[in-house]
Image (tube, rainbow, N blue to C red; front, side):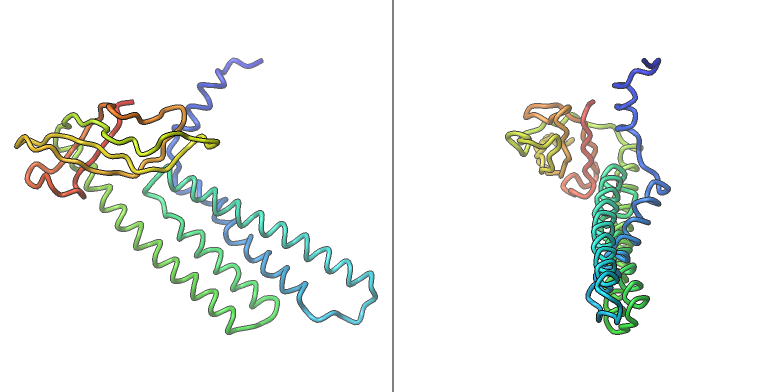
Length: 232
């Protein structure tokens, strides 16, 4: 028995916007997981020692366990990071955990076998993904700042969903699709804009739904300066 409504608590958790500190755990998993995975695989693939069969068996079992643990940590870190970054677009996206993963793998190669060329390639790939993550975050931040400025400095007009972008959810509780909206600008011109949307089965978007639309009055055809928000 509890004095807290579990449904209300679940909705509050779902509505919470993740912060940068929430990426610490998935970041650790995304870095350590590939390091354990690669280190275990290289250890298993190494030359057998002079020990008896029992020692070789233990080494293989430990390697298999490390491989499994590393794979689970890698997948868990990546998908947890991705889930959090989708809920807060001001956080680094999918390229950041890939950068951490390749970096961890490169360090593991150096630690286990001292294969400098392979380690350098892995770390170099990680650096490329890190640069891509920073560039993408910068572009996204500029776009979000533009949207916030439009919403702050102008009043919305009414828009409508003309294509919901999906027919059914299937076995999934969420779906990623492109939704088409229409609105009429100040000159009486009807305009259409598409936006990607993650739709939850508990709050589906349907054709004919009314939405709020902000746009640049000086340049209504600039799709980069069109903001659409649902009336939930």
